[in-house]
Image 1 (cartoon, rainbow, N blue to C red):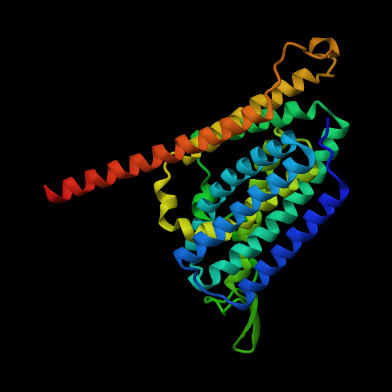
Image 2 (image 1 turned 60 degrees about the horizontal axis):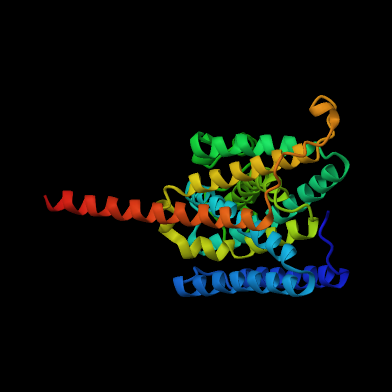
Length: 333
């Protein structure tokens, strides 16, 4: 059964979130600067508090199930968004983006991500509405993605460059230096593109890849397009500030990828079980529902997601602390 929320609440939420995103964008454009740790932390705390208030409003208006689905979806998307940051760090370093321009690059990346995810959410909702067996495909895809996350190696991500970027650099004129936030500039009387264009495309193509992972994952928690989209908005809104707040800490989160892989695998299994429960494929159980297939409820999902993130983060910090002590003892010796 799809969650049903009052229309006024959905419309009001979209308007309020739209205003916040526009204000955030204007702030970045008018005040390009390198955020301090204090500023970044306050903004991240603000967006996290905003998400919790939103969940509280959902609880008051429509009950705990809807609030639980939003929280589980938001935390899943937030954990996957942190994974985005690793690739963003690589892209920024690969194209030597000046620190004062990184906020704008991240903001444009977030807007591109919202557009792509909005398209994928609409397509995913339509597929689920028309074909219940699509949960088998989503589940299998997430299980494969989980294995790749934990044990695979993404050369494009490591290099920060895709085939599309390589092609563009060969076929268009790009200036060697950045010219503030301009996409086009004039050198020796000739109009050329700046490296900012390449960075935006690199961020955009990366967002497509992450959207392919994240949308099936959250549809494993809720089938409400409203909850899916708002969870994505809240997860992405504080991403720019989180990038500056974490800074070098990202490199210390060695086991985060395993926590994310576990979450994806868990949701993949949940989707397959749900597909079995709703089964209509004639070559599986003669097209009958598989009643013994257990359904994993929202609160169990929420507990697993939170537990996986806590365990992987704590384990990462413990490992980093031990590694630093080993380095110190070696240097003393």
